[in-house]
Image (cartoon, rainbow, N blue to C red; front, side):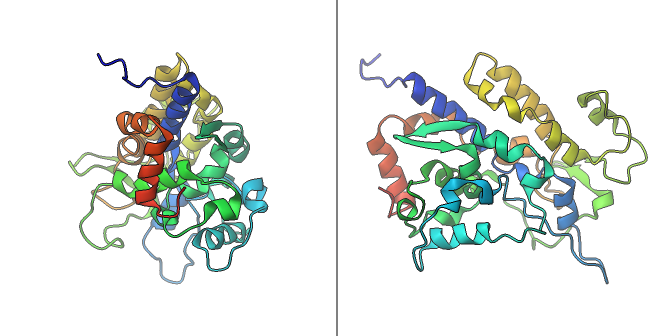
Length: 296
């Protein structure tokens, strides 16, 4: 074996593993019954349910965004202003679990001498266009590269679907978890008359009556222990996450409702590409310069 074979430092290894967790939970805003309601077909004479599934943390409580510098015509400045001006009456993913923003603030990583919390990266994770012609350093004082990278890769994690996006959407109370291979299972929704047995086995004993399945799962996901992914308990933590997350949908169209765990989380960041990112800051800069010409 070559003596030049790269081995990450302890700090680099920790960042790699936390990036794995970041990729896993990047689209977690879809783990919500409100998401299913917002995606159902339009109803005559009834308003559509509004829900912002891409905001997993509240930007109005995050100093990186609150204290940003406005640069005229800069796409990143426009994006920051947009999320700060989000209508307070519109439900967002972070409002589906009261402790979510604070939990994500506590998880921090170092990326090439820059410190980030999961909370400040979350708004970037599902938007592939934020890397282009933006001056993130000028606007928020950081390159925001970890979030921009996950956002750039976000679309790749979804399977391609035929037909118009509005075709084959399911009414909320008749939502089926489906795969392109024909396997289907109805989701327990707010008017379910009995608790889905498979779900019941996954829940604490205190949950025993009518279930909003996806929102309930979001509330019991072991997000308070995300840091275990960097320890000897990582396998157990990942197993808990996968068992619960695969109950959710990444889309509301049959037959393409790929599960979150196999569709938009686990595939997003493969370990080998992530490890290569940390071989040197030069390699990271080279990758980001291809994605975002303005990146340092």
